[in-house]
Image 1 (tube, rainbow, N blue to C red):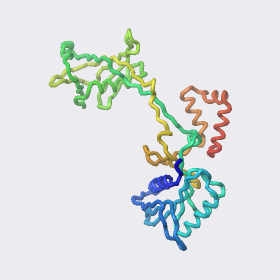
Image 2 (tube, rainbow, N blue to C red):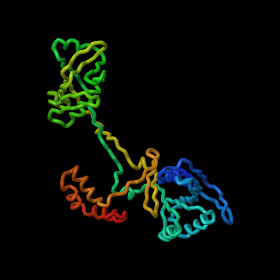
Image 3 (spheres, one colour):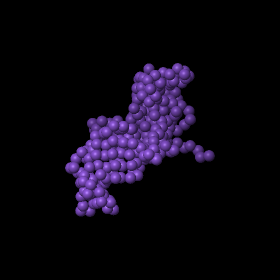
Length: 340
């Protein structure tokens, strides 16, 4: 078994802390001098420092920080903070203490007295996700176009529509837009609609569309009728045919068997918390470093609104009445997070 030297945690601290300070400074900082596992001369002797950070703030003031990074299983004691305070006094700099496991009550008291910034930077736990979305799963529904029948303005143009090729649509303000793109946009607007809908597409084309019926044999196939409200032409090579509308057959394709899921555990790598100020940041390889949004004080009201909006009025109260132990657990967690 490999011995934990703490070097990986020192490296993580040396990478994350400068980025946090960039976010916190109002006008931004462009350059940092960061040293890992370095030795600095103090007033009486030299001191080994896990991470040393220097930068100039937007007002032109030079900032120096000594960082103690502890990757240990026990919470930090007040003796460790007192020892660290001696070092930063020797170096005449500010101090930042970083750990995974938290701080004893005495350590927090001493750090607050001497103005030492104490931080936890660790993997999120189940408790950290209380009141927050941890997993988002959704079904993607899109129309699969099965057949497209154009309705020309005049009957003599029906034969011309049998020509093979990639038809484009031309109308007021738009030139040669792909037919399938236009129809897919319209069908998406028709989903769950039972009455005619006037639609203005992103290209500016105006249509009136209605889902008329389902196929007589296969009821999963829907039939849509699209009427153009502006003069519209089908274009192929140098030919143009004015069309009045389109009849389209389509079926909704969904990934129900395997919904797409996004899990916070796969994205959030570490949670940064300033113990004295309560300021929090999430650290992610995908999203970078982001301030963590605090939970609302009226969390239970927000939960009630969400559940009732999905399952109907009174659904939340009916559930907690049936499962009183869950409401007690929620109350305990809310109290722990300092939420009324």
